[in-house]
Length: 195
Length: 282
Image (cartoon, rainbow over all chains, first blue to last red; front, side, top):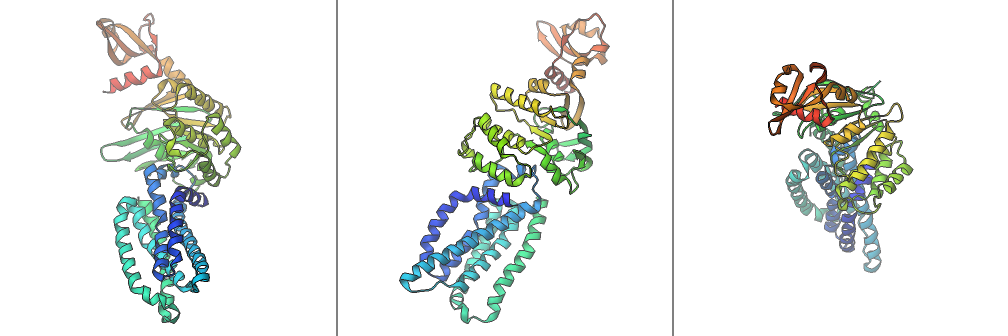
């Protein structure tokens, strides 16, 4: 699986350079919306890799190699998680550095909530993209992103106040991410095998 | 042991179907898979590598049932070159090497680097800027760099210039000097197969018309060249296919043992045998 993640990393590396630039610019503005937007945006990077795979018919070649279907599916989740974690750490670092000047501290709870939302987005969209391909899965993906964006809009004000939020929301997001992942991975494997 | 065994494989795609395909490639031999476009060669290769599930029948590669969980480990011993090199376009040859080092347990970086030099492939040029020949050379380099025992090559020599093609055929020949090394190669370049193969298998519209030793094939068949009247004097069973050669003459593929001993026949090439058989089947 490591080789597959490495392959995807090489494929999206050029895209990531642009991501890093946007990340740096947006991270300097310490707002909950920017953090959530950046992390969820990074959860889309596996689809860039998958679009390249589809264009080159990589899966036909991968089927000849000693990769299991489990490895192929899991590698996309791992890539998404790594991209989100990297963007989170990057946001935190840039916000901490900017905070030296502005005096505002980065919000760790906001970041954690963003990671959970990114994971949930990946959990919902990846099975559809694996089943229908990036082109057709994109529509489903857009609907989900739209839904998540509306939810974020509603949550942003609350998330800014996270330390004073009722416990259920703090618990709900990580639980939702964990439960979503537990359901999404087997579903993705089933759909990928059917494909 | 047989390197490849297909037993009564069936796979239907609606209009096209592989029907009752049984094929055996003994270990240590080279088998050429021949057939026109759409005959089922690539489908057969996908069935062999368990990339497609058959509707019926069984397939074994290097003694292991391809539908069993153990087959994944067997893929370590199989080098595959498909009709296109399906690496993502942004990868470079160096990056492909690094990915394959994590893919195959017995990946030999020295061998891979050696092939990159031998084939004159740039290490840092993106794959999308490679010519078709360069892409196929990269695929061949990968297939040969993880110490495989079996090579499965789908149109691996197409797109290569004659000099490189000759070099690649020599590499394949060298590969089978190890007695447990085998090759299944599909190609439209029949002269390559005649040069390389011990066995020739001919697929036509999803059915295997024959799989025979090449030398035996060349001994069994001959090409008759003469007049239509001379040809009509031969028994119908002796004639497998015929064509007009112009000026009232005919050429036909005949079974040597079915024609009178004194009748002079030209030596049939593998290409003659395949072309006449396709015409005969039509």
